[in-house]
Image (cartoon, rainbow, N blue to C red; front, side, top):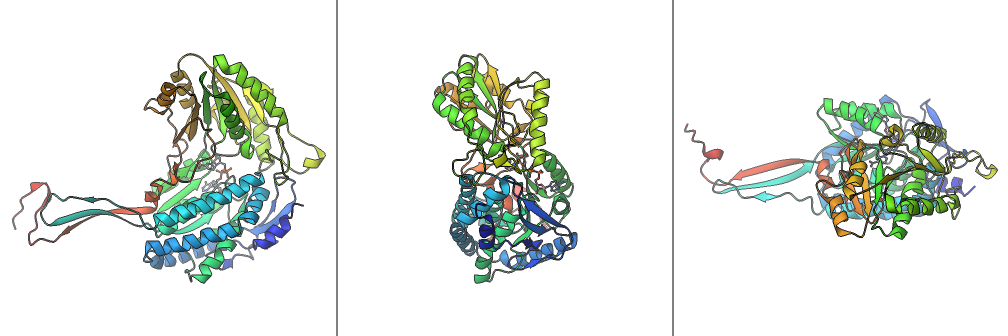
Length: 513
Ligand code: NAD
């Protein structure tokens, strides 16, 4: 159905896929740990893939170490040229890859295509960056001395990604790493390995045509065990890990213990504040898209709406009018806005959160059912839930990776709403809807939102690649994608050059020998 087998063939994904690739060649096909990947939309078998062993991992790291020795010497704009060609290949394969993202992850086709577009955009960004990677120059206090900063390639970058953005997160990391002169080893989520296999097939021709050594772009299919090996591995100076806070805490501890660098992109608990000065037409659209888009499985999904009491009833009734009409269904079917959850465990977590929040006093206003309609058989579908709550409830303080939207009332000054929005452990995305300049600026002030992303009159979900992406507190503190996020992929060096006949010491020290 929906031509998925054709798409798999077109992308080089076979019925049985190998466990790792160091570029053009694949290995580990004979591994005994072979797992079947079923579509979240209907439970049908898509393909199977071999999972890598620790011996496979060694092969991949060895190839990456070898490749780094030459890749770091390729001029950055030439590395950018390879990324430009990768971007073009992704343009060519946007349609089938977007479709596969949709089929394997369960997001609707438009979002699958959007994810591939994001990959293309970050390629363009990285190409431009490859002619920049600027450091500063400074004036030395000593005569006939020159001082400057330079950024050098760091080494092997381990990329551990989550199921919900199965391919974009790789590109945010790998494309920047590549222009920075690093080589990358990607361990995709064990729930979405097929899209990773497909991406490797897509870039393979670029690697072959340009005779890129094996090991510049590697992929290794595995679960947490391979991720844990990467975290502990001193040969990988940077680990970029995207996923739950639970995972990030473990990875952060292990990488920290060896004094490596960890770029952590973890869970969010994102809120939209709606003040009495909001344009409710755009606010409602933003809330609904943020809460039910990707079936609530974005790190930036809107989990809480904090609404001023005088507009609370209106916002609530407009949401109540919209929710029952949401088109829920197969993600590849035209017109669907809400697809399935990733698996049965995700459905269970959705149900448990709803039971718990009601036990704490939450009022379920709409949705919250598990759908068993015959045409949705085999899939993991739920109806997005609206619950009236208080911010301090234990369940509200947690990220439940499913479409549950908590409505919270505030009264008085906007600062009360800001304090509620900050009163969670996560700090990824936030936004305010208001046409009042003072409220908007209060939200963006030092006493305003404490999140990595703070928007005005735009929802929490969906960011442009040009900005730095990431969040504070339990979201992990990492930044990737645009702005100067590239700096984490490089080592920084301060250079002082003396072209005089003297050796003046700094700090005015006299030391005559
Ligand atoms: P997850 O934590 O279950 O898995 C993420 C990745 O970590 C997988 O590749 C997994 O194999 C690996 N992993 C798990 N335990 C590990 C360990 N001990 N050591 C090394 N690797 C380990 O997350 P998920 O269910 O795939 O994704 C959903 C979560 O990801 C949500 O919390 C979401 O908010 C978060 N997320 C965050 C961002 C962001 O940029 N902040 C983006 C996407 C998703």
